[in-house]
Length: 116
Image (tube, rainbow, N blue to C red; front, side):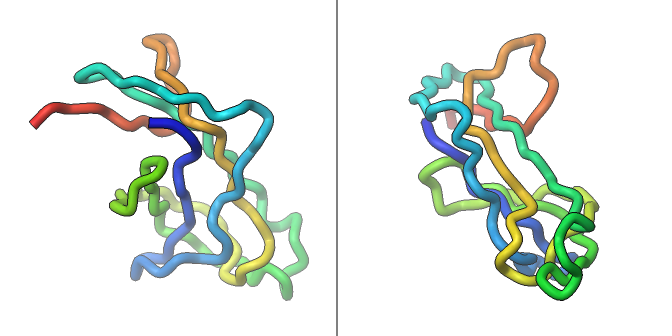
C-alpha cells in the first residue's frame, strides 16, 4: 500500500462535515509492504476551527471520522468527537502519507494486514 489515507469528519448520522482532509506533502509517499500482522500509520492533524470565520466554516460537533485505506473504496468509521466545519471550503484536517509503523510508535491511525 502507499499514498495518503482518505479522511473526513462525520456527524452522528454519518454525513460528511465540510471538506475532506488535505494531504500534508512534507514527506513523499512511499510504498509500504505489510507482512501478516504488521501495521502502517499516518498522522492526522486537526485544526482548531475557531481559526476560520464562523460564516465560512459553520462550526459544529463531529461524532467521528470516516477513514479510507489509500487507494481503497471501503471505509471504516472511527468514533472521535471534535469540532469540525459543516461547510465545505475551509480545510481543517490534514493527513501524512502512510508509513510502516514501528513498535515504539503510538501516534496516528493504523491499518493492519491480515490473511483470511
